[in-house]
Every structure is written in structure tokens, then in C-alpha cells.
Image (cartoon, helix red, strand yellow):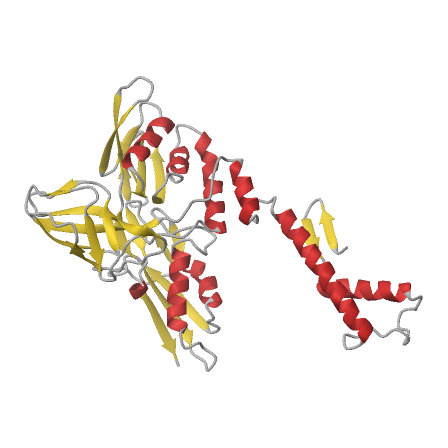
Length: 402
């Protein structure tokens, strides 16, 4: 066998060429032929060589199967049912597909109620349901978060939502100033591993990490980030002000009651909260009510610019291929570090691999900016805690160098 076990490095397999050489040597010994003897030629074009090649392929295949089995016990390399089994230790299950969420501006008469479940439509015919009832204030405009009626990666560009399906007197128009937070298909290997790693904090109490780990695993949560200020004075961290002895929880998607209950269960009394959203939770044990605050971040477009040299071998669909690959990376479907979200430091280098795998051989540069409309292209960005970056294909600029 060409499977090698080392207590320090783990399980490895030998190169196919080494395996073939060993099998050829075994054949010669079996036929009682010394090394280099002309009586048994093992070149690939000979009958003996072809049989040796076949045996080498079988051995290599079995070794690779055993290697995959061994890697199935490593949380960082496990896939499929092996990853699902490891996650059960942490009481986790692979997340099913999630819908796209989009923040829309609803305009109309003062006092008009935009009810829960109200339906709007985008230019592509996709329908979206309002997730929380809202009342239009005296300014004549209120923001509501809408959820796509189908699950999966439905992209919603800027100004794409423009039709009111649920007709309500006093509600005049609907639009979206930022692209939607694209949903996802069934959780990928890299996404699941990132969530498993973060979930280790779930069993803790009284820390920002324990709250973030719990909320991130709630159904419908697209992105979550949390910071804590243990000091006696307010601090500015990741673009937001956090009062003393408080946490700042930023969550996009999910059910407010479930988010509030997660805060209630993970943080003891005496902790302050900051954010633009209030939720009241009844203690399941004593029945008392508790008010908690968290931030529903503003969705803000993110921009990417790449420069490539086009060659005769460049695919005719290279622009669409690049944009699709970058969106998947951004949403965490192909990236090692999950979705780009609030409070993160984002490096342009995270996108290089995706562009190369999209078939681009002559990639020159990748630059990123945030916000897409007013930012400056750079190699590194800091995303504020109260801003959820979104990436639409129209905000990916491709420069072709002759």
C-alpha cells in the first residue's frame, strides 16, 4: 500500500509515479527477473506495462479513498456526511437554502401601515414579502426588509424592486437604494466549517462571542457581528460608538424575537445594549419583560475592479464568468472565510483565487472599494459594524488591457 501514516503529519499518499515503480519492481521479483533485465519490459506501451498501469490506478484509487476517509475525521477537511456527523457533536445541522433579503424604501401617506407579508416585485418578476410591519412616518418614507419568496441565490440589483403587488391605500411606491443581501443554496463545506468554528462560543455566557455564535446559527440570519465595551467610557470601534459596559450586536435577517431571546439567554443583568432596533422578550422562567436593542445594518453596495490581459485563449464569456465567481466568493459560497459582512477587514487578495478558477490566466490587479458609489479603490477595507456590504454584478468593473 502507498498510504503512509505519520503521528506528526497525519495520513498521506505517495506519488503515483512512486507507486508504479514499486509495483513494477514487485512484478519483476514475481517473475524472478532482476532489475533492468530485458526479459520483462515495463514501459507503458508494453503489455506488462499496461497491466502495471492498471494496477497502479487501482492502488492509487483505493489509497485516495482511504485518504478521504481519514480526512473525514478532520473538521477542516471533512465534507458531505462526514462533516454532517462531526457537526452533530456541536448540535449543528447543515443549513438549508436561505432566501434573499432586500431593504426597500416605501413611500406614501403619513400613518399608512405596511403590514407583515405585504408583497412587492422586482424587474425580473421575483416576489418579496415584508418581514416586519411598519408605519409610514410624517416624512412620508419608511424602510422595510423584504424576503424573497423563493430560496437560493436570487440577485437583486439597485432599484430593481419597483412594483407593489399588495395594493394598500396610502402606499404609493417602493424601491431599493442598495442591492439585496443575496440568499444562498444549501450550506457549502466552507460555510459550514466557518459556522462550526464560530459556534464553539455558543456554550459560553456573558461575552460578545457567545451572543454572536448563538445568533449566527439562528434560522434566516444572513450576517451577524458583535463587539463589546467592558470599559467605563464610550468607545468608537469599527465605525460605531459603543456605550460603556455594553454590547453592539449587528444582525441582518432572522426573527427579532429569536434574536432577542438569544441575547436574553447569553447575557446576564447589568449589560447595556446599542442599536436601532428594540425587541421585548418575556423571561420564560419568571415571566418578566426585558427590552433589548440590536442593530439592523444598512445595506451598502461594495465595488470590485479587476484588470486582465485578454488573449486568444480567453473565453468569450469571461466577463460573466468572472462576475459570477466574484459574487459567489463575496457571499461565502466559495471563500474560506465566509461571507463578507459587517465589522470585517476585507483584503482584495481573497478574490484572486476565484478569478483564476473562472479561467482568467492573465490577471493583473484586483482592487476593492466601499461604498461602491463614493469609496476609493484599495487593497484593504474596513467595513463598519452598522453597514452590510452587498455585491451586485453591475458593481464589478472589468478592465481589459490590450
